[in-house]
Image (cartoon, rainbow, N blue to C red):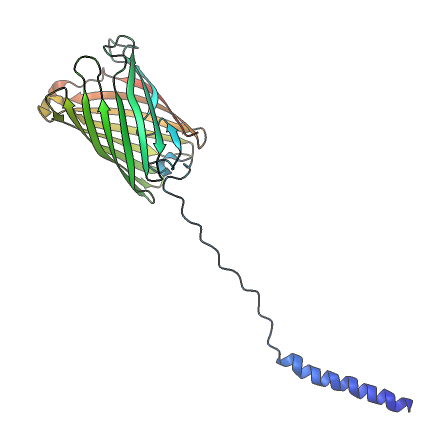
Length: 278
């Protein structure tokens, strides 16, 4: 009897094994876990947080942000006059601030100089303006801008507007920036139209350091163009302490050549600049 029970148990176990074997063999192999597709990060907004590299920054500031001073406009700094015979006289203190209405639009308020000492006008002018970003990503960026200019305030009061376009093309460590401007002077009379074209060739040698050379073609009025045109030349560098503060140094010949032999290397100055994004 015991042997029969053992044999029956062995048959049952073998039967379960034989039945179970084919069942496990027919089950499909376990599939490896599926990887979730990686979410693509959205590109930074045109007016987002400024990167360290100046040549990679958007041409306008982020919405609701403030910038005291600027790299190419509403600049803040001190200009020491080194013109022959006028050394350390008629120096300028330029002040400017910008506010981002949106990531594409910014407003600015600035003066091109508080003049001291030995100046006819200690406070020369004040301007309000805007920049509207047309293209804010990639190697080419462009913005339209306009300004309302008031001054001088003593003698014949000055009033005018300026319209223009600021653009930058970047390629590797190099960037070229130009700011085409058409100043329209309505007073003092007669009304006049001029042209101003500053160009910067910038070298991003490190994330912090950006040396540049600078050329400016200026025509105050097309009336008597051959006598009034002038060409300025300068060198300088920006050093970014961090993403919030930039310091600049320039050495400039504002009119090294000009119409009617009016240009000279005797006209020169040194500028100290700062740009702050709190």
